[in-house]
Image: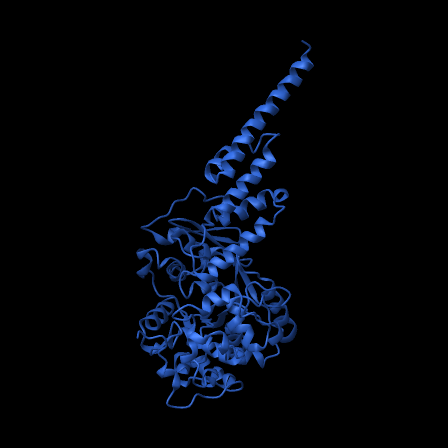
Length: 478
């Protein structure tokens, strides 16, 4: 038989065999045996007859198992197969799970590693030896993988005081690693410059408007796909530059993925992880104050539900002293006002049209359907759909999330008819929630206190005594 006929029969036989293998994969997939279907499909991704369909089955099997991180990763790797928009839809699925506090599928398989130090393992005895730098990327080796920050030009981790590196490790790893809770470094001399961990939302924008004009505004930007869309923030940063001639320093990082190693949603490991980029930059920029836009809701109220004397709380005493050891004053420039007060400050500023707390909106607009839109954008008169799935989920929770502020937002937007189960909490006038709680000013350092007080009173009035804030005790057990 001529050689070309042998080749033809061989190709035909290979094609028939490939079709048989594909039929088995399809049967497993159609029976809902997605892991088994995927196992066989992985052997076919390089087969010229089956590669496209087998890759498509792999993506769809992960989708059916709600493994959104792997869906996103593979849709990026094989974009020509993502005809059904799995990547975008998986990102949205992640967004809803994050917002509702449900288990978030592990995204750590998408975390990068350094080139030069990839083989370095976690050193549990010499914690500071877990820091590395490649070009402008700073790496932290932790027990579960790698975290990085993309720092400004000329940054050198060798010129960063050990107490700063130690503090960053605690802000990121404290909930998961007991070793980082003890101080082993010498105290850093106090820096001079003032900075704010700036998110671009209403609370941190209010903080920026109250603080001195020379305050450095630094934005932590997630460096991986998630529910957050950074478009609105960057538009706002341009407005800051155009109107107030102030630039925003942006530092990309993936440190919010650390929580996913512990079956927790993407987010900040502690309240001060959002400032890790500024702590790392403290020597580079001679920073002596790091501020966070934390309002009454998370200071003088415990989880927005019940009054506490925050100045005597273990939280404030511990962390203010912890920052001081690193030569930093921990500043909470809006601890004396609520989220509602922050909204009213933004509303009266020249930046108002560009400030948007929604993490999913585009073109300067909010999505109108998320919890952020409900209690941030709605009270500013922006369109909101209170019947959306996410908003309804939060409104039905007990205790209500960010309770005191959420009740005020319901009242201001006249949505009482949609939340009859909350009627007992909406009987009183809540206009006091927009006013200044004067005792909070004492927590601000003397260097900043007067200017912040003066600036706050340009926008808001003082709360009368006796302070209604101090009587807040919502959703107490019956």
